[in-house]
Image (cartoon, rainbow, N blue to C red; front, top):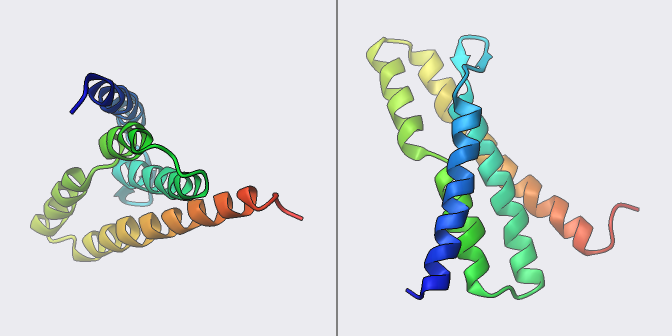
Length: 129
């Protein structure tokens, strides 16, 4: 790995880590579900969807993927925290809340990726008409 690639990866990672910290430092509740991890996963998935279309449309250099996809989105989103939160809900016998957490994180993250791809595809093709 070249120094510029390492710098891009680290820069993206620093920015994503900072945003994740800011989003997760105060509890955000949707009903009984603490949604901080859900929010970072949705935001990161949406950004990744946007980036996917941009990178394909303009044949971006792979180094941009290090900055945005791997560095920024990789440090922003979190499967491990999602898994730990779900495990805690299961251990506390909050089965319906655990199921809601699983469905929300997976379903909304996939939906956000598709929304990001769709939005950027519309923008790339000339905007909304």
